[in-house]
Image (tube, rainbow, N blue to C red; front, side, top):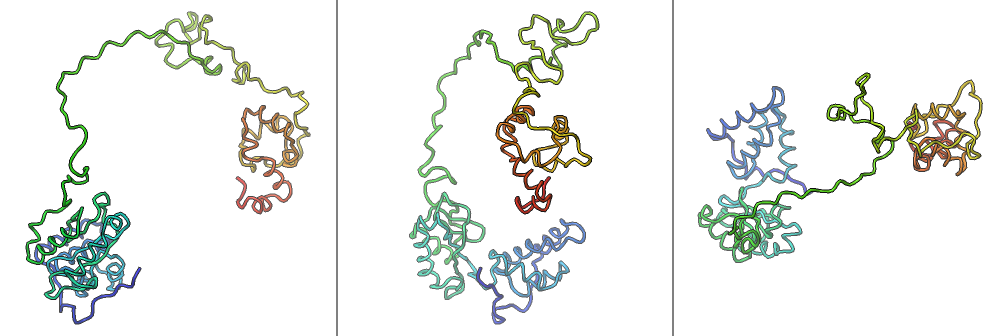
Length: 370
């Protein structure tokens, strides 16, 4: 960003004071912030000072610093950082900000800048001969769909042609800026399509027919996961008395229910049984050592999984690091993991931990184990 400095002393006024109305507004604005946080009002006050005088003067910065109990340099930092603050005198009747960002550039903003150079001054920020007009190029002003556009004060003028901008500048030069229509300068309502709306134009001419009653739909059997089928819903017993046992009133699925599927004690559905512990692909087990490794250091292994692994004789990182593909598939099936061992790469993690503990793990993976 270019260096922004205050105007030379020859342009600076002797003093600054808010008008009576602006002074009341400023005090109300300061009171919006909690005690000790009044400095948060610095941007609103600077903007109001600019709206009053047309630009931010050195005396205005000094005055605002005193009002907010701030060092002068702190307010100066804010004023010089934000390009919305004008630090030099601008046109007394209009300061034209021409958007030069890509959408406006593609739609002809360069031609608008040529108009400003010919009608106002050849250099940005310089005023015309009578000091009533000035201009500058700015970044996006937020009306890209209506490009190209300019902003004068708080108003935008969109969908411009060079000829139309000349007319607008002439109006401001004559002191008739308030008579210029703001917003789109063509047949467009705000950001609606150019030329007017093109859809949803016709009002309905016929009374809509009432909707027919829905037809009966044949019941379709839905496949229910076995583990869910054997689990009665909490509201079933309230709506279906057949689900209550006549003896104790507890919820139970009727024997004739086609969804009733016996489940194992460990909640594993029939047909999804764990692989046999006698399977040839089961990894080798060992007796529990005096100080087993903390398998939870392997990402993907929590306390419950560690307990299951210990139950089948897996206690060390070296054991996990030695697993072949068939052994990993066996463990994956036994834990009902469906590929987590491969996704989290337990073997690579275990090799690093077995080789050098946490230090080696950090060297290999660039982070601490969980």
